[in-house]
Length: 232
Image 1 (cartoon, one colour):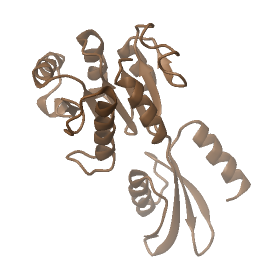
Image 2: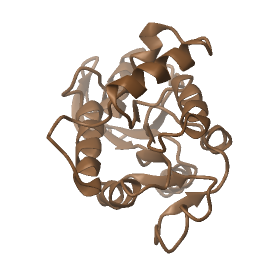
Image 3: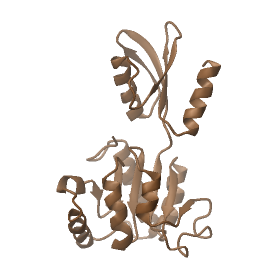
Image 4: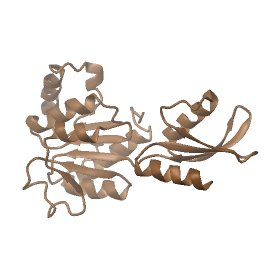
């Protein structure tokens, strides 16, 4: 990698901008391709988009050229609304799997450093926090408070984003009521179907840690396209 290219890649990574270093294996020519921007080479753009989605660098054939596409995606993000007991093991497990985790709760007694050591905390109201964080297609949003005043505004905003996963804690009855409230905010049934509720895979989880496992497993399933919905 040339010095100028390396400097640019480092700057892009610091800015959390998705970029691919495309190298022609025959000529050694290098170019940077950014997600959502045309490089002027449609076959290369298509190959790069597949690589962004796969999140795995690879050597590929591009219109008769052998190229190596080195992907530099920004980190996956998990935004947890509600600094409840389940959020404690969930935030730790998600961090171990590579997520940049933010726990959001305006109740400072819940979202405290003592309860969440080393985790990013936001004491803003969930809609304000998510508005600032701007969930994208590499983001998962989880609502855990059981309080419509906190969960509903967060889910409303998440549904307007490209977040690849949206989940909400609660019984089937509670979730049905939640869908009614969100539909009154203008969300169609198709859009509302993006919310996983009750949240998590059905593994018989009981304890907060077990429920956290089921949630992270479902997020992982969705991310890799194993379940009924895959990340965009």
